[in-house]
Image (tube, rainbow over all chains, first blue to last red; front, side, top):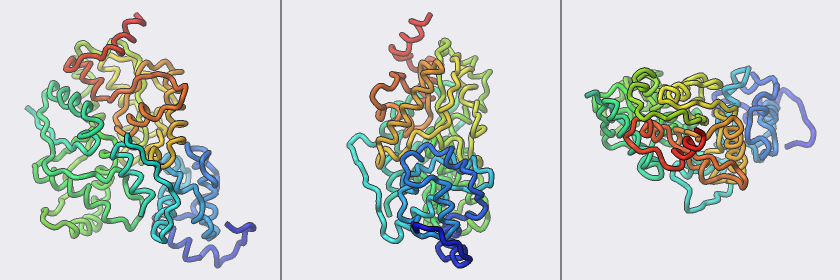
Length: 131
Length: 275
């Protein structure tokens, strides 16, 4: 992520923002940064960016957010999505960022396999964090 | 006898075999003949949230077609995750354009016509009604204090929620009808960590600790769930020092209440000691 925020019309219309909107089906600019998603997120403590900060960086067209750990920590529990007062499905934005990363060959998540893991956990993880 | 077409999914044939056996026997005791869906395939486990992931709907919709071939209008699931993916795909293809595109992916199957309702055991029991459950409950649950843990996939997103996503009462209603004393606790609707068991087991342990502590502090003697992944995490991914609360499937508790399966000794002891 950029060390300073550069606000410009070009960034707001950046192909990156369009791609995230297209993949997630969400209007990222509907978010007014209230932070309810981050307050609802049970895994925020393990993230490098709070969910609302992830959305903010997408709004600003900052592709650096692709390198963030947050979307890969997200468990797609949808607590943020059902509680957003602006109707933004934040979990879909997280999935879009994971998909953009996976489709560029990023696989930042280490699988910690143990023999007792049931299929339901393995298939779930495989579908969310592997290409 | 009324017929019910049932979709098992992977967990019910593996780590949750006890849940399947207990539930199917209990459902039969309630007067329904259960027929397993022929040639069922994986539900996909987690619903794809990306707009262009059309392929992920093919598996779930193929299951709906198998149900349609059986002449079924309802498809019963016991697993909360199967319920979630199947019902969301069923919702997705309510849009005629989406339906057309998914049908185009099918090869030997007939087209899906959109008439199958996916329902979870929780909904089925609620629709059977508390009076009928109460009449059938012998020996009943004898005032056992049960915390119903919903987790995510029965409640979110709202479109497929089995009840109010923040204040559900559907499982409590069932448990009360079966003679238990339902215990509400704040963590009952919050995620257990799900498949992070594979990538961040420490995050799952923290969640499981909070959930069990929350249930114990509110007086639960037993936690009941309808999700095989929650069940796994709540039992096998406990942090050190977590409350030693037993965890059971809703279908098992149903079987104890209807007398189709004996109440396990450790649970019976809990009720006995309190009295």
